[in-house]
Image (cartoon, rainbow, N blue to C red; front, side):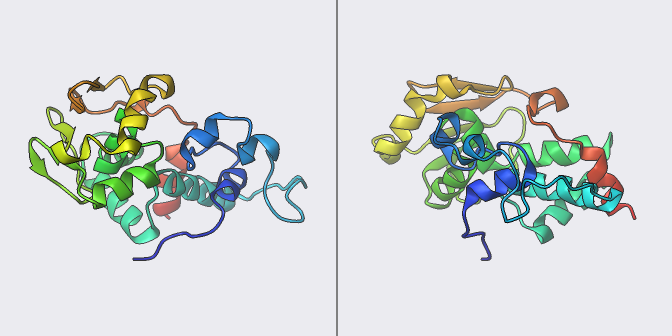
Length: 208
């Protein structure tokens, strides 16, 4: 499977915002975006005026990188969002938020979405008591995501759970630290996303 293997801090700098791709490091002074809050490259500090197409493309790239999704899969999410009732842009973000790897990250079981995706792939989590190792598995309201019994002694998972409240747990997810369990009591609303995203630009880009 194709994946990005370059310096992830450059992605944040390119998009002009923190994408929280390196977990705890992003909350510290060592964060690459804090040190160099401008685009990477020789001409990164130069002011550039983007065309309408360039602005739409940058917004799409930002969301793809934020959730760790490649182009083909992202396009499938968009096509599905257009077939759903409601506003297409908000539907798209909700689908991305409902991914199992994102739920694991939002609940505080992992320090970043990349780490959450790896943990899910290694079979550390259950959904309603059944093992699921597919990061793109879509969670529904009422689902309970829990850590496997054998994985509760995993030092990294324990560390992440202990520091989850400091990073903040999404309001639409209830975390039971003692039981290593997260309950999704409702689907995320647009205000729950918490990132500066102009999803209408993505809709405009794909609608051309």
